[in-house]
Amino acid sequence: MPDIRTALVIGAGITGIAAAEWLRRDGVAVTVIDRTAPGDPNQTSFGNAGLLARSAVLPLSEPGMLLASARMVFDPNSPLFLRWTHLPRLAPWLLRFFGSGRHDRMMRGVDALTSIVTDAVDQHAALAAGTDAARFIQRGPYAYMFRNRAEYDRHRLDWDMRRRAGFRVTELEGAALAAHDANLSDRYGFAAMLEDHGWLGDPGAYVAALAGHFQDNGGKILTGDVTEIAAGRVTLADGQRFGADRIILATGAWSDALTRQRGLRTLVEPERGYHLFLTGPSFQPAHPFMVAEAHCVLTPMDKGLRVAGISEWGGFSRKKSPGPLDLLKKRLKQVYPTLTWKAEETWLGFRPTTPDSLPHIGSPKDDPSIICAFGAQHIGLTLGPRMGRLAADIATGRKPNLDLTPFRPDRFS
Image (tube, rainbow, N blue to C red):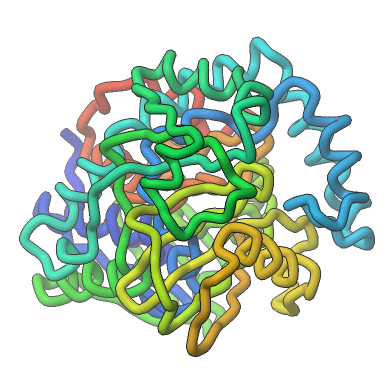
């Protein structure tokens, strides 16, 4: 085992905090640096659907994605939006993305994701054990709502892949579905249920609680903007420098700017995701579910109901587009026509998406002191504890019990 006494973790989202806490438990002196505090609304970890989606074994690109995407961007009712001024910058990335949808490549992606995502709920439980964060973890089923069985059958490949990964699917139809959720619109007549999933009652508070436990037990968190990384050293925008035996990059969608300094081409694209949060809803579902036609998820949370989803390609602008939010509201009314609420909030964040939908986990070949742990696309919250634990294992010299080759950070270089 290498001699590691100190570590810097760049990024205070779920992955960074998980890496820092696992390292702290190993006796390493750890400092976390980020521009924003753990659990802050500007953290991507704050605004997701709150799912611990351990069945998320499917890459985003699949056969036929090119034609499907072309149709979707011109359809105002589709969950895919594009800021056309961003297209020239996005085009090279898209070529890689569509290429990843070839059947053989997709299947390799399924196997890789299966190896790291299926134990997600247990990974969260292990990380949160003995901390105040544990109270936010909920366990239960996760469902996909379809208009009818025919719509479900059109997604047969997706469900075959989930069964291949070991998941049992329970089908609810007609009266059985209506009895399961009496508030559901008759627009939806079929559901596919997956047991033994999880979700968080408050994702932002959950990450903040984990960070608080980390600090209460000797960990340090600093506010700063890391602008330069080098072997064993980082530099902040204000000129401060910090050194450590290992540096873990858990900077999500912002990682590409730092890895390029090391000659590493990671191709992380900021995918803009939205949510609508309703406080004081007149009712809530018993568990989270995805509306298949809308690609949005409804999740019951401690302080209200979250409706999250939509994909928009448009860079890092903080300006919210009206189209995605209007569509979320429209879909919500189609699902629950009688739902009322007291107040609503909207949110925009940036998912770190790679062309092959696989995160970057590991070190560049020329610098083992830097460890990448970012790029988990739509399942960053789900994978955060697992990725953080893998990063800590790599830093301390423990050999992970899985093949990390598909996630090597130099695979696009």
